[in-house]
Structures are given as C-alpha cells and as structure tokens.
Amino acid sequence: MSQDGFYSLLKKYQKGRCSAEEQKIVEQWYEQLGEQEPIETIDPEKIQLIERRIWNQIELKTTTKQNNKRLLWPRWTAATAATIGLLLVLIWGLNRSAQPEAHYFSSENVSSIEQYVNDGTKLKEINLPDGSLVQLYPGAKVSVPSSFQGNKREVFLIGTAFFDVHKNKNKPFFVYSDALVTEVVGTSFTVKADKGLNEVEVATGKVYVSKTLSKKVLSKGNLPENEKIMLTPNQKVVLENSGQLKAGIVQEPKVLANQSFPTSDFNYQAIGLADIFQDLELHYGIKIEIGANLMACSFTGDLNQQDLFSQLSLICETMGLTYQKQGIKIIVSGPGCDN
Image (tube, rainbow, N blue to C red; front, side):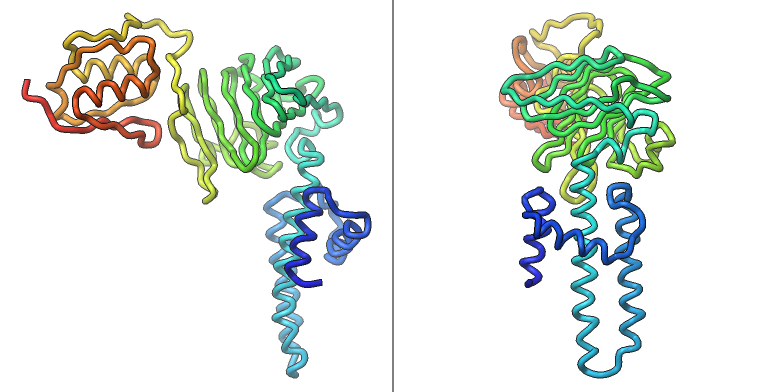
C-alpha cells in the first residue's frame, strides 16, 4: 500500500466508513505501538509524547545501522513515525466523537448520560435538570447528565445550540464542544461547533471561553485565568485556523436586555457625535471610539427601527465618515467639522 493510500484509509476509518478488513488493518497498526492504555482514554497532549517516544526509539535503532541497505531504514521509519502519529490523532478523534463525554465529564457524571438529537428542521428545546434551557439547531446533538452532581454542570455539544443557563454561582456551567470550552455561572449564549467552525456568541451576562484543555486541567474546576477569554453581550470569539482565539463583535448586535436606559429614542436633532456614540455604547455595550477632530461634529437624523451597523452606516454616509470593527470595538474616522 502506498503512503497516499494509507492516508486515505485513515480518513475512512475516522469517518467510520472502513470495511471490517480495513478496520482490522488500521487497528493492527495501533496495536504495534505496544501501548497498555486504551486509546479512548489518552489525552491529546499525551499523543504528542507517544509520537516523540516512537521517534526516539527509531533514532536509537538507526545509529547501529552501517551498510547501504540498512541506511534506507531511517527514511522509511521517518514516514512510519509520521503516519503512526497521524493515526493516533485520528483514532483518538474517532473514539472521542463516539464517546465525547468520557474525555471531559467529571467521573460522578459519566455513569448516567442522556443524549438529545435534533433530526428535524426547526429548533428543538431541551429543559435541563437545573432549569436551564437549550435550543438545539437542526443536526445538533447535546449530551447531558441525568442530574448535575459534584461542583459543576457539564454538557457536551456537537453542532449549534443556544443556551439560557440558570444562575448558580456555586456550580458553574460548562459546555464542551469540538475545540472550545465555555464556562458560565448564569447567562445566555450560542455555541457553534459545526463543519470546522468553532465560535461562541454572548447574548447576556459574562462568558469565559478557552481552547480545549486536558481532562486533568478541567477536573480542577474553573478554567485557568491565563487560558480563557472573557466575553460580554454582543461579543464573540472564534477559533481561527492558526489555532488562536480571536474576539470580535457579533454579526447582529442587540440592544442590551434587562437594562434601564434614560431614553431609547434614537432620533437625534443636532446632537454631537460624541454624545450619540456614547448613547449607542450604552445601549449595545460595544466601545465606539472617535478622533478628537470629530468632537465638534453634530448629526441630525432618525435612527430608530435600525440595527447598530445600519445606524453607524447612516451617520457615516451622511457626514463623509467611515467605521471599521477592530476586535471588540468600533473605530470611526474621517475629516473634522468646522462648526
């Protein structure tokens, strides 16, 4: 079998499309590693250590090879080591997708897990044991303990879902998804873990997000301070292809819920830009920065019945300005005003 053929076989195994004979071939490769620990219990971090140990053994063997025939061994074993490393990752991913809760859930929650799947075309609502609400999007699946034991509430999500979490400061709520971990006390947010997309959007309250961590780290309780990003309403975080978490603004910011505003009238008559943007900041919870040269500018116009970005566009088009999103804030720039 060629190397390309073997890689193709690994992909088939990962997707569960192998024949019985092909599955046997792949599993025999893993058995040759001589590992005592079942593959489904291996953390992602340990996979890299196993690959490194395999390479060290190969390197040790090759130092004793002297003739030309045996000098072909290092080139072959390098490809073999890389293939075995990839195989470990793929098998670990397959087993984790088959039994994802076992990798994340606390031991007291593993024994009794219920799975909810949305096979329909509309949102499906799930009421959790603690009074929290989950809205599953079509094609999504959530795994939930029959009761939340211990010092945390844990669920595992595949796909997209909206969570409205019942507040409990003594028992934080965790959502484990494909590549992210989300921690809250009591708030509402959306998690997207589907087709390579890993994203969290916040509707209300504070949300903490980190990349997937080992079970050993997760078992300690709250997410480590140096690993997590805090999000507030109308903010989101996306896991980029580079592996970095990038915070930003949601596509359609909403006026903050459960807030008391002096006024919610967006009809401005000769009002200074600084005051207008401060008003929008208050309503949406998004920082809007303008240059000192715009402080003397004023605007007249009715911005009611429009979303935030439409409001900004109308102001900017009227006054010859531009705005751009920069992380979790908005920057407005342009020529100043004489008045």
